Length: 129
Image 1 (cartoon, one colour):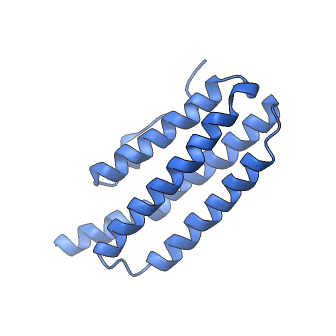
Image 2 (spheres, one colour):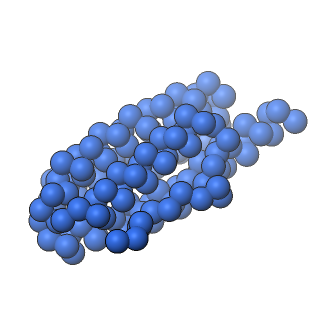
Image 3 (cartoon, rainbow, N blue to C red):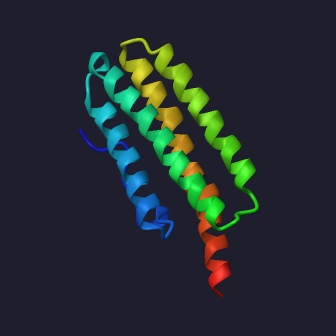
């Protein structure tokens, strides 16, 4: 089975901690993809918990740099946590539920990295100029 999420250099923020955490989120999503629908619940819970850890770390880094869009960024994080919470609470052990979860998470994380996280990376880069 091919990977659903493939890490690309386009996703790199320049912060090794953030990039490693993003790559781990991809690995968790790929574990969900390669597992049977009935085996996904513990991995979904790990994904949910790790996402919370990652968001906290990312927000702390942004606060250190006094990122002006931090409050908006936090709201995006809260929205995904809420979505993941609802999906995990209502998860039915079927292939469609698993695929729905992966589609929502996949669209969110890739768009979030490419748009929001890279916007922060560009902000940090502008401070170094």
